[in-house]
Image 1 (cartoon, rainbow, N blue to C red):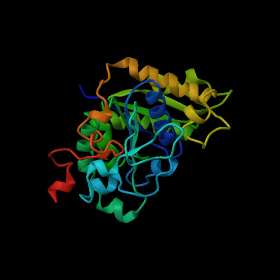
Image 2 (spheres, rainbow, N blue to C red):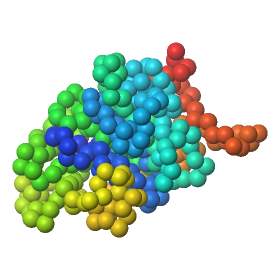
Image 3 (cartoon, rainbow, N blue to C red):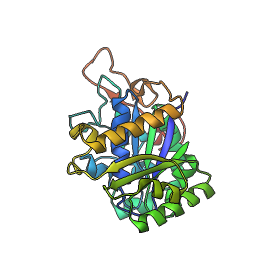
Image 4 (cartoon, rainbow, N blue to C red):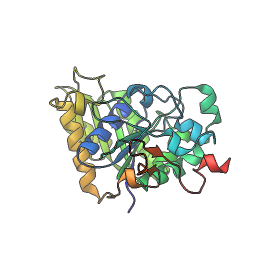
Length: 281
């Protein structure tokens, strides 16, 4: 059984798509699910910087035939620095960061993104795809490939208008809207009115918090209302379907430590196919 792929989308930048992706991923990991967060904002990638991954192969390199998918995987252990080697114990939270280089953006082929997401879904319970703002070709791919699209917005009228456009755009791209996440909600926010205006289910309401910036909040500020909102969102998505039960560490993307050298863990690429760049040359 393959895992579920969710695209987190929004028409306006700065609404909290990346923050929501990371926190939802950490909440799903805490709930026992192997989860991968993918920076599919090919034009303005920032997920890597948010989790302190500033070097090494990226999704852009994979999409440009310059790296294998396994080389771009970064494990995000709870309370430990990111690592390119898988921890011995799970569940796992794995990131596929993007590049902020304009040259990398120009070289990346968005057409291969669907294959990357499907490959990751064969290894993990959940794959969360952080998409770019606006209605570009790059943002269309994950919307159509994902099992569901979660639209992220703030109460700002411009953001709400752009969220409504994103909902319509996702439908035309073949995506299935499962609901919205409202971030930066304040005491005066009329959630019911906004939900009616958007016309889709409000999955979570994330209030403003002073702990913002130290991500993921579900680990750095677990008692905050924002962390609670992301934990409830994780539970909601997990209850919507039967996620896969595969162990990420036992998947084709990861090779368990060799018995002759139990201290080393080696990430290996798939045996064949378009994603195995290292063997395709």
